[in-house]
Length: 89
Image (cartoon, rainbow, N blue to C red; front, side, top):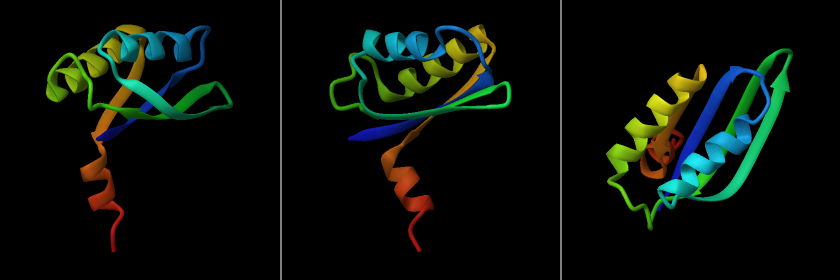
């Protein structure tokens, strides 16, 4: 199973590193990443494997959101099933 992790906030040094480290701490494996800077805004989307998380998925979602707030970022995690359902006609 996979999840989509989006990260948005004012650009600064180490955002990708910090978020990647947080994912690694709970065994969320990053399989793809796209990031860009739009004017002064950092925007990143990661696809992560969540099969081997060492926490419950809901805890991962809550931890990432709280971590984002602590960094002044918005981090949103969406399970691939929900993402796929939203984008199926």
